[in-house]
Image (cartoon, rainbow, N blue to C red; front, top):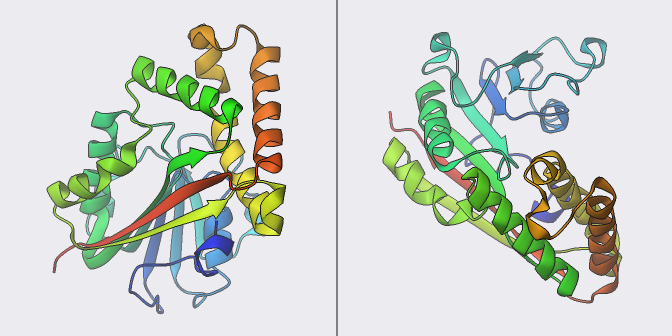
Length: 248
């Protein structure tokens, strides 16, 4: 995603300096924090959180100013109130229900330092051909079943405002999906397909919604989806970054 957004990790109008603190919610493998650590002073304190620690990077691969811990973005430690200069979250579209989105944004507001910034990153629409259309219908069915809002991009600006954030900045870009888009298209395809592979367990537990009836059918749908993205000229997904400031 960095490649499609001007090679930047930080889009908020802020320059991180010595002593600043950064939080990434839903950090996963920590790839964003690890990359950011090469661009900022080595005494910028970095904290990555996730509810699943299995893919946290090994401590010996991280510099001393990066820490990872198990927390939910919907319930952050009270000791973190007004702590972080920058709070970053991305790709939780398939994880949070509407009330959880509101709780998460309120919690991120609480832990952002006055004058600090939040930065969110999520997909909006993706399009290609008939397999893509079928997959979108499946994701819509899953969303209704679990109370997840896959079109969270429609509501994030208002939720940020309701939490108290100001100076909203929105960056929206349509990026190519698949081999037809060259290296950027391949990188983008890999990022997006990882999001949708993450829906496998909840879809199968719910019975497949009439779209897939087994693990094998789900796997084949994902393979067909990637193939269609590769082969369909113009297949793309629009991504949005929102940045907003906590008032002083």
